[in-house]
Image (cartoon, rainbow, N blue to C red):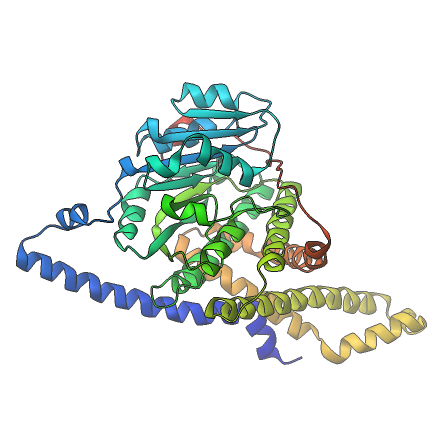
Length: 441
C-alpha cells in the first residue's frame, strides 16, 4: 500500500480541501469587514444602528430557548442559568421527556416554562411537542434548540443573531466545545474529552467553516446541541421523522433538500457540552450518532445536487479511512503475533498464509506512518487550543479512532435493518461547580 495514500486517508482529503476553502473565506470576510468599517466610519453610522434597522434583525427578545431533557437534574440548573443570563427567563422552555428525577421541579424553580411528558417519546418528538405546546412559531422569530447538558458562552447570541440579518440564512449552527475540566477528572475522562475536542476542532474549524461559507453552503449537519432556527421554516421540516435515532442530521437534510435557506456558522457562537467520561457512554453515543447518520442517508438518499456530491465524497472518505484504520490495526496484531511466535507460526498453515499476505502489503514502517499522521492532528489541535496536555493524551487517541471506525462500519448494515424509536438514555452526568456555571469551559 502506498504510504502517501495511507497518510491522505488518515489525515483526510476533505479536511485538507475544506481547510483551504475556509482560509479563503477567512481572508474574504476580513477584507469585507474592513471595507464595511471604513464605509460606516465615513458615513458616521454605527454597526448597532444598521443591525437594528434591518427588517430581518433578530434580537434576544425574539428568541425562544427550547431544552429537551430526560433525567437531567444534575445539569438542568446550570443550562437554564447560563441561558437566563443572556435572554429573558420567560423565553426559556423545557420539555421533560419522561423524566423520573427532579428535572421538572428544578427547571420550574429556575423560572423556565415546563412541559412534562409522562410517557417518553424521544428527543425529536419532544421538540415537536414543545414547539406546538408553547406556540413558539407565532410568538418568536427564532428558536434555539439547546441540549440539557450544554452551557452557552456569554458571547453566543452576540455572535449568532447578526447572522440572521442575511434574509437567506435559515439557521445558525453553534460551535461545540467540550466542557474541559482536567483538575477534577480521571485519566479516562481526560482522554475521552481531549479526543472529542480534537474531533470538534477538526470537524468545525477545518471542515464546517469552509462548508458554511455563503459561496459553498454544503455542511451536512447543524448540531442539535445549541443551534438556532428561524421559526417560519419549522413547519416545512419533518422534525420527528419516524425510524431515526437522532434528529439533527435529518433536520439538516430536510433544510437542504427543501431549499429552505442557508446555514450560517461562526466559531464565536460557542457552547460548552458535557461529553461522556466513561468508555461505555462514549461508545453508546458514537454508535447512536453513526447510526443516525446512516439512517438519514437511507431516508433521504443522494440526489443530483452539489450538496449530495459533497456528501458522497465525505461518505467515500469516511468508509475508506475507517477501513484503513481497522485493517492497519488488524495487520499490526498479525505481524506482532508472527514475530512473537517465530517459527511456530510457519507450522500453522492458515496463520502462515494470512501472515504472508499481511506482510505483502504492510510493514511496521507503514503502521508507524498511520500513528504519526494521526498524532499530527493532535499537535495542530494542541496549538489551537493551547493545551499542552493533549500531547501526552494524544498517544491514546488512535485506539479511540479505531473504536470510532469499527462503529462507523458496523452501523452501515444496521441502518438498513433497524428502525429506531428515538427514545434516549442520557450518559452519566456530573454536576458543574457553581463557580463555573457561567464561565466558559
